[in-house]
Length: 373
Image (cartoon, rainbow, N blue to C red; front, side, top):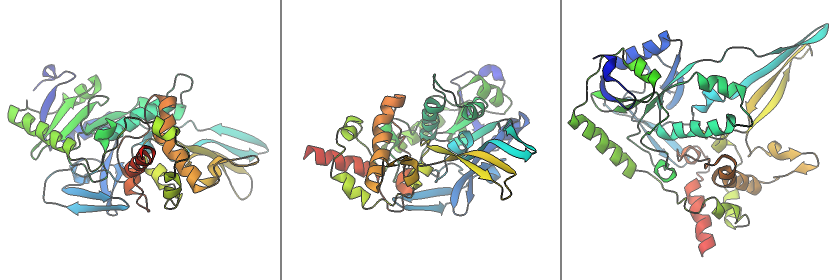
């Protein structure tokens, strides 16, 4: 078919082998194609070239403090739920050199002027795209635009995927972030057994898809996809009542539940590191042993790190109770005042990867129950 049949909002049926050619086209246009890959019994986001690199026939099973992969005989590549990594590592890298300095008589400073990579993100779930949109509000504000984030975001191609198999720790429906995509992507896949249904979301996506061989989907195929999406919506493993957030948390800072959860929390920072929206960072200097060269790096940090809240005269959050309360009241409370959106997308990573199995949905419910008792 010709590209004249394509427009923003079009949906076509793409044979699965055509995805290899589509990814090759992206690389020809100087994109680095990165997507899900099975490694060390988990799913990581890394460089991929085609279907052979995707997790074929893989399901995931997630529960509080528990994650494992299950092999099936299906020829499907996006049935799993993402693991601990999120796409923010490509836009807000965990470690980024700001500048370096070397001493050759006098100190010479050199800014990091490496060009930003152009990524094509393959297999972005609706909750993950919502997280990217939230980070846009943080790093691309009217009063401040982060140059590292902006340069990577502007060159981004997003190939999204609708989520058909939510896990026990998922609650994106409660947060209004999934499992179906609505906007913000270049192309969006819905995977069925034989084909991908592909929705066009941008002119860039339309131009890339126009080079491939596709068909118009039948009513039967479209109905099968819609039914799968409806089942996913009804199959959330968890729910969160957001009616009175953020007032519930910010007006009950002395609730007894903060004491209860602080006895379980290890302040290990796992929840903030796996979270796709958390954005705390620090600047650190790395000097060589001879004192002749150094570099300053921006690195991820966490509000659970005791040193993060240390200021002259002491620590403003000296114990786990105060640090956990800060994290939760910011994520589901004051974040709304700052960025006009809650800081949680319902991906459930913080539940799965908390070694103590602390469940953010249970904590909100417990505080609500205490307040209403």
